[in-house]
Image 1 (cartoon, rainbow, N blue to C red):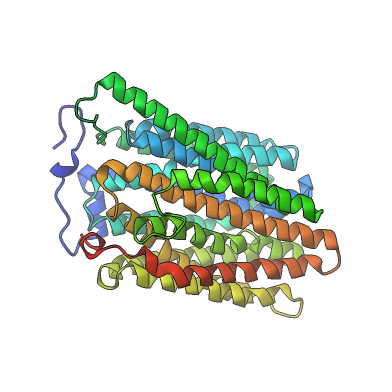
Image 2 (tube, rainbow, N blue to C red):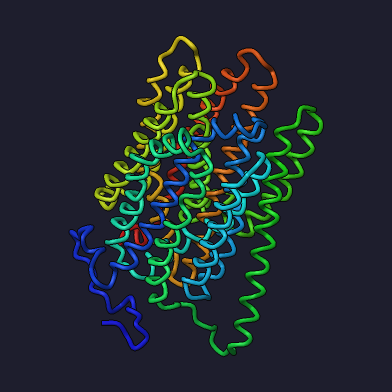
Length: 487
């Protein structure tokens, strides 16, 4: 039963039996959180898949193909800041506060994006969306860690992944229909009222989860608040430095002059690496075993997948001249494969452990990326992409939630917020760098003329394969000690 404030304390909830079922997530004490979080993720998924489907159309209308990658990278650089700020607040504030502010910014970005008159304006809108969207994943992870017993956590992550299934099936088709009838702008604008409804459900549920942060022994409330504000300010500064460093490095990759390219990339990394080191667990950059390695490998995972995934639509529609419907099929099948991989992982990870699924996931991404390279050749059937890009989808399904479980189980309750924030920081940074590097390669190919775009797109998928192989070779570092690996 809830206490006088209407909150269900975590230890008052019945624990899951060893054969816990997904239906346990809809028990009265958990139903609001499950429905609210899954509904919000569904809408975010709908927007993500819709943008990927219509981006070639957007680029054709607004021009500036060189900024194609920045439409993705700006979103993720904004998310980088959002997740750091929200992650620090989640350890001290009620969960609903940073989540509410984030949804407001996300909605503002949708409105600006729907009214964008140029590609730079769309890039700004996507950055604002990212600032707000960055609050959703760490809030969801912390809520799961506080409210659900460990045996139910894999089921919840599988359900969160399944929230991509319906958008994956209907999202690309709806986006194609909207783009062909009322226009691509309504891919942004049409989501705003639904976001308000889903966000309201999630916020109501989050208000009932107690804040686990407690002041240090002997500390006064004012002292604790001052220390918390100082820590949050420091994290925000570091996040801004990390985002600026990543942006400078990506801008350097777009330079035509080699000297300018080297100088900007070096300057960006000089800002990015120290900031990332400060924001992540000790030992992350050197792949220290357990949580630090898992945090870094999440970034490697997202880099290797999204460097290709962001350019599937450009490959099929712009380079190969295929109808938008084929892009929709590829995204749909890949999303279903991702969800299937997650469900399989949730049922078997307790027996085989996380390393097995991390290695397998990276190898699937490498194989699928290599098989997609020939699609850039005019004589190869474009339909091959439906099969080839399904394999990385499976890989992301078995590996992505595995990393989350390693971080949650390897972190204490009091540090789950900051650990989840570091995980999402690596996640978003990997995606931003992957899409940005891919964008720089595509821009260089476009500038060269002739078949340059096709060669660049092939190189994009080759780069994804190489990074995935590096991840597979180091995935063993994410193994937890036996006392933390299992519930």
